[in-house]
Amino acid sequence: MSLLAVQKISDFSPLFFLKLMQALVGGMFMQMYVCGFNQICDIELDKPSLPLAAGELSMRTAIIVSSISAVMGFSIALIVGSPPLFWGFVGWFTVATAYSANVYPLLRWKRFPFMTTFYMLISKALVVPVAYYMHMQVYFFLLSLVVLFHLAFLCGNNIFLSGGFH
Image 1 (tube, rainbow, N blue to C red):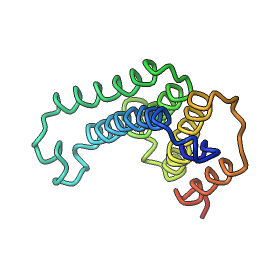
Image 2: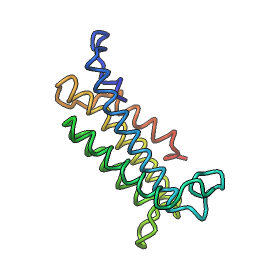
Image 3: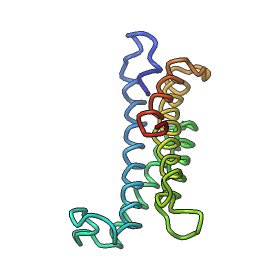
Image 4: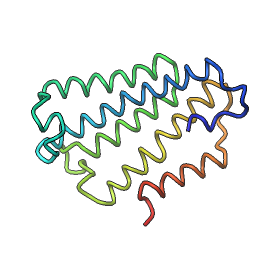
């Protein structure tokens, strides 16, 4: 999605790749949080080949690594001064936590097929791709956000591919 913001070949510059790496590294940390938190919540259900379920990683270490990963993702977005990236990560964090957490009756969305689909749509087809696009569009190209046809098409395509329409 970050590449959709490119309008001409000369847009590929060292600054472009720096902004791209900021988004990707922040996203990597958020993905580490999402996977780690999911394993923490599902330790009794997970495959024994996963580090936490296999006993290769302690619960304490998993909580620390997952927490630090979330903080690092948010910190990167704040340090680079990108509200689209920060709010995209907040949205991703929120829906991923609601998907896995088993602390309130309305959470642990994975128990319900509709809510699982909703999580996939929101995180993987809308929040994250649009945040990456907006980060590049607004904070690299210094353009106002214009939702282009191809952005809407790709989000719709992601919704279809993630199982939103059967």
